[in-house]
Length: 120
Image (tube, rainbow, N blue to C red; front, side, top):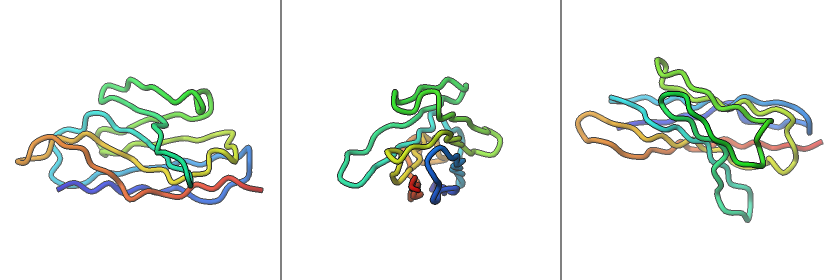
């Protein structure tokens, strides 16, 4: 099986920064896309940023220019650098990975989520 563990969430003032990490472990053969999602109270889950194995990225319009997704394939880890944070960024952030696992095959795995709160 595969475990995804997020870290780096917390309370930050508007305009501040946080860096989230999501580390994958287990019987991993290959990790394809890695994605950060977020869900605020009373709202639907939304895609924040995606990164391919080769490093291609795309972002939600609401975070473009403020957030940066990156990954370390050797460490099976994806990062989300969040700058110029706004109160509307407050949410539970979760990572998702498309993983090839030996011997079961390919599947999608989720982390448990980490809370990000932006407030003065």
